[in-house]
Every structure is written in structure tokens, then in C-alpha cells.
Length: 144
Image 1: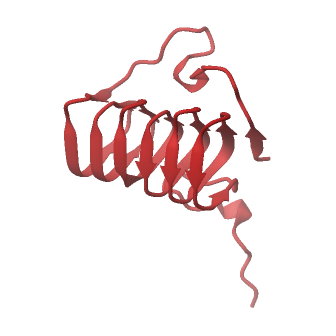
Image 2: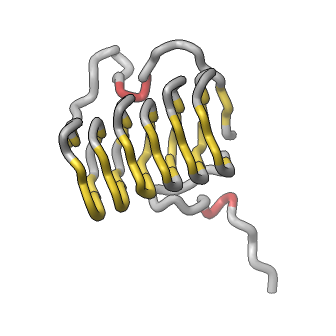
């Protein structure tokens, strides 16, 4: 079942393992980097710079406070402290920090919005697969 949680602490739990240690980050797009085009990966990604295009990974995405993304974002888990202009699909969880600015539709199984975050668009908390599609169990059944 989908869960909506409002948070007011500065956590990034999705980037911590159960034992409290940090997960290994595979890709960092630094503050001086602008990526134009499509980024596809399978590991965790931290964005501190700019992306124009698409960002897709099977892992987690962390959008830093000064990051600016004009792209569709697809990942298992997404944490946003910066700006995204585009649709966001999170197959597991989406967290919007107080500094987050999202203009676009969002879809996630679990959604957390911290007080102060801004969001303009539609939200859906239907379970989705890694491609951003609704899971077969929640799709409408065809009738003959």
C-alpha cells in the first residue's frame, strides 16, 4: 500500500543501509558539470550540477540543493533538495526536502514532502515498475 509521510527532519534515510553506513555512490555529477542528453545507469547517482535531457538509473538519485535538472527522472529512490523541471518516477520512494522545487508530475510508491518544499503538478502513489509504468497488479484488467 502506498504511504504519504510529511517529514521535518534533515534525513536521507534512503542513502543509508540498515546498519547506518552509507551506500556506495557510483556517479557524481559535480556542481561545475552540465550534462546534456540521456544518462542511463544502474547505480546510485548524486547530482550537484545541471542535467538537460533524461536521467534513468536502477539505483537511487540524490539531487543536491543547488542542482538544476530539466529532465525526466526515473529511479528506485529519489531525494530532491534542488530543482527538477520534468516528471519524476520513483519505483520505491520520493522525498522532497524543504528546499526542493519540482515542476512536473510525480509518481512514487511512497512520497515524503518536507514543510517548505514546492511542487507544481500531479502526484500519483500507484506502485510502478523500474520503467515508470504502473505494476501489472494495478493496471486495469481487459475485458473480452
